[in-house]
Structure formats: C-alpha cells, structure tokens
Amino acid sequence: MKSATILRESTELFRQGLTELFDTVDLSDLSPERFETLIKGLKAVANQASLAALQSSVEASDRHDVALLRRAGTTFRFKVASTKQWLTPFGVATVSRRYYQPDVGGDGVIPLDEQCGMVDRYCTPDVEEMVAYASALMVPREVETLLGKALGRGPSATAIGRVIADVGQFVESHEESIEEAIIERAPLSLDGDVLVISQDGVTVPMREQGVRCGRPAERPGIRDRATSPTRWREAGVGTVSIYAPPKDGEKTPQRVDGRVFARMPEPHMQTLERQMEAVVWDLTQVREFREVVLICDGKRTLWDDLCAIPTYEKATKILDVYHVAEHLSRAAEAIFGKQESSAKKWFETYRHRLVHEDAGVDVTIRSLRHHRGKLRRGSQRDDVVRRVIRYLTRNRDKVRYAEYRRRGLPIGSGPVEAACKTIVNGRLKRSGMRWSQDGGQQVLNLRTAVKSNRWNALWSVYQGAALRQAA
Image (cartoon, rainbow, N blue to C red; front, side, top):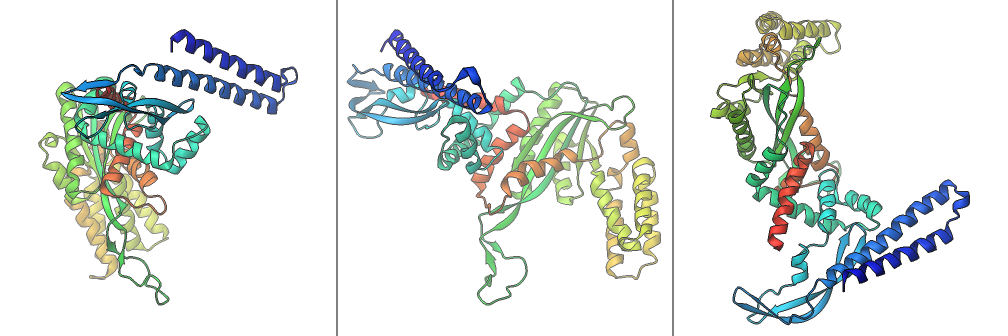
C-alpha cells in the first residue's frame, strides 16, 4: 500500500471521527461534562486514525511477493500469514505478518517482526519503556491500572512481569556498557569537591525456607510449624555522592548529586562493593576531589570489608553521627532511667560536645565511665553502658566531628539511610511479598536507575541493543 493511500484513508477516518464527535457535543454551550466528553472524544479519534495508519504502514512493508528466504545457508519457505497483537500508545494493533519455516527444521522467522524490532515483544518500544519505568516505582497490578488509564488498555500483570525480567536481566548482563553510557551522558555533577561513599544493609523477605518467628501458637494446629516459607536476609544498599561546600551562613555541606546502588543478599555485599569501588575509582582518575570520605554506621564487618579496598585507603573514615547519637541515648536511659529529665539533659549535653568539641569523644567516654561506676556490675544497665563505651573507644578515630565540620565534610549517612527506605523497603517489603534472588535484583536494577536519575542512559543502551538485534 502506497503512502498516499495510507494518508488518504487515515485522514478520512480522522475526518469522519471528528464529524461524529462534533455532531454529538454541543460546542455552543460547553459545560464541564461536555468539555470532558470533548477531550475523551478527540483522544479516541486521534488514536483510531493513528492505529489504522500504523497497522496499514507496517503491513504494507511486509514483502508479500517473497516465497523463499536464504539466511546463513538455510532456506526458509513462506508458510502462513498470522496475526499478532501489539500494544501501542494508540491501542492494540492486530498486525498480519508472514511466517517463514526452515526446510531443515527449527525456529522460523517473521521478517516484519524483525523489521519493527518486535520479535517476542508485545509492547512497542515506547510502551515498553513506560512499563519498565513504572515498574521501578509500582507493583505490576498498579502499573496495569495506571497504563490502562493512560492508554485505554494496559498490559496485563503477566506482560508487565516479563518486561521487568527482560529489562532487569539486560541491565545485569550489560553492566559495563550501561556504566559507559552513564559516564558519557549522565556523569555526576562537576559542582562539588567532596566525594562521599556510604553503604548499609536492609533485610528483605526471600522465598526461602526460614525459621518461624513471633509468638507461639495459642491454639492447636495454628502456626504450629517451626519453619516458615520466608527467610529474611540482608540486602546491600550504597550511595556515591558529590558534596559542595556549605553555602554562606550555613555549616552543612550541600549534596549536589549522587547515585544509588542496591543488590540482593550475598556474602559481604561483594557485588555491591565491586560496583561502587569501580565507580569511585573511575571518578578519582578523571577528577581531583578535595576529600574522599567513607560514612557508614558502626557495623564492624562492613568497615573491615571497606577498609580492605585499596581505592579507599586514603579516604577519611567517619562514623555516622546519628547512629552514635542512638548509642548515647541508650546509655543515658541505662544510667538515669527512661523518661527521666536528667537522661535527656545528659544526652543533649554530650551529643553537643561530641559534635562541636575537639575532645568531645574523650569527655563523653570519661562521663560514661564515671556514671558506670555507680551501676551494679553485671546488671543489664551496666552492660548497656559498657557496650557504648567500647563502641566509642573502638571508633575513636571516626568520630572527630568538630574537625570534620571545619573541613566542610558531612557527618551523617542520610542518603544511604533514605535509599534503604525508598529503594528496598518501599518496593520489596510490601504486604505478602517474597522474592527470589533474580526477581528481586531485576526490580532493583530498574529502581536504582530511576532513583539515581540515570534512567535515560540505561534505556538508550537497552533500546540500542534491541535495534541492533533487529538489524
């Protein structure tokens, strides 16, 4: 079918649709209800004409005069014309395509699917991107509902799950090329001069056999098994951030850009650490930072792993001030009692001294030892204070907050704490969810790209690979 014919037929369809619409809607006396009807009608008319033009165009490009195909020494013969539904921005197109079968057996080919990049795909590329992007933010049923509203008919939850798996696994197997695209198209901001690396862990429900927790069963036969179909394991979350010096009149440095990384549970967060270390190494090779900083909570195994990485050897190590404050709060309650005003007063005094005085950690430890001497040795309260003293003593070189503030460095790991909540908790820990290793990672691969504002770079690599495969 020639382009002129397609244009004529689509234009006529559009004209007829508009005529019928304007015969229905009285434009001389608009009301909110009629205005809404007009908008919906215009959208329906445009979609109908566009869908007809799309379907006619692609079917016209199929070679109906070709009976044989030769590929890599194999002959493919025309077998049958079959139809397939494609979900497009205009609605569902039912497209007729020619199927060719090989003489020697095996998979056949459909040239039209290849030409359009639609081999084994239900959604057109733009719709597929909508699905993948939305799936980074919502569960499949919500994506189905949202796109159903936007497109008139959305993909099923099953089709959405397949897009998540396809794109998520592509990200997993094309890590290097996607990273190159991010460096080229969406590099971290040049505005800051401090590079900050943070890591943390957050538990996720895995589809694995675990030990049942919670209260014992109160009735016979009710939750009387010792095992559970869910096992909670620790996923890894990390951030690489760029900070600029504090603005005039302020003391807190400004986070100007950052990237988020997340991996499903694995020993020592090894893949997460490798990915983040590679990004940091690349950055430090092409840019000169005033400071490179590691900020984490007090988990010893995490610090042991990070300090063993050569790239971080000269980094300034800082213990997250908010975790330190939590330990001080527990010590204050153990010393003075919960809800006591003296506990609050002591906590506020020594939190302030710890952050603002050069010798803050020393005076805090001395005060803790003094008050511990008044507690009964071996008691629970004594044990709490003893552990806080050991915690501060062990991390003495990481809590020089007054010095860090003078150097214009952040002292809190807020970005990674927020990432644990928004990247993992907000998507993988909703009611009734349990995850396989691969299924959870596929979602995290999409979600971290969106939350890092690097989605366009990822999608350019994915779509480029699809186009090369079609060619």
